[in-house]
Picture 1 (cartoon, rainbow, N blue to C red):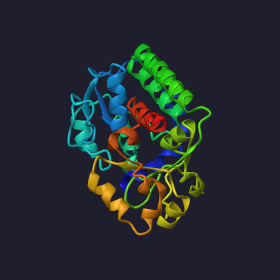
Picture 2 (picture 1 turned 45 degrees about the vertical axis):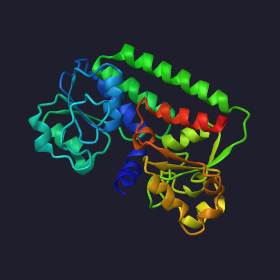
Picture 3 (picture 1 turned 90 degrees about the vertical axis):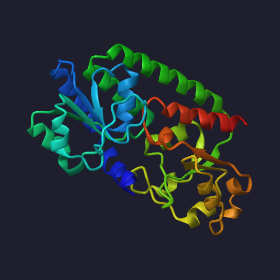
Picture 4 (picture 1 turned 180 degrees about the vertical axis):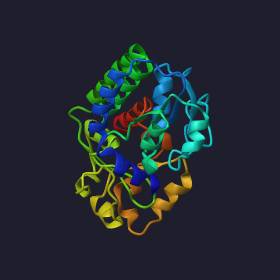
Length: 280
């Protein structure tokens, strides 16, 4: 799956990239006026920290907030010539397809590469970095503090409670986020026992599980992407899955895709869903 493969390639280098980005930002104090975001997660962060008037174009998947200036440019198959037509002074991307960052740099276009973070703290680091680079440090710091406080409150709700065994399905190929991903890190913080953790031998964050492993692990809760009831029914009809406790008890959450797959401020909506489930 394209999303998973790109995440696997990018997230491994998140810490190193943030370090060098901060060095570059300290050297460049001029606030950009024509920002292009080629990442839905980054788009959401930019609008939340007050950079909306600086953003002149976003990729085709950046559907939130609705007022974001969406284009037909793909974050997965970007075209350097098309990007240059918008005359951006800063391009921010999360997938460095075909060495896009290097190609844009040759044209004199500043580019920041922010791949998928490995944990919640790295989400906050990216918000901090974007706040500094866009000249919106104050709003970025307020957002960071707000997200930290909300996360602490959610975590406290799960303190001293029994772990909940969960299977989070990214797609029907059985890819699942482990503790080495920002999604899996949230499960850890919320005291959920993620069945993907033991399967992620490589430590890249998104292992492909086998149906046999999922059945044998017998999760209490299953998270599915998208609000499609047919998906849930299809899962229930899989061979052997009727024996899984989550299926028997109908503990299946159909999650809006964008909520958990993006590492912007709305990731806390996902945390809230987990908190509400555990309190029922």
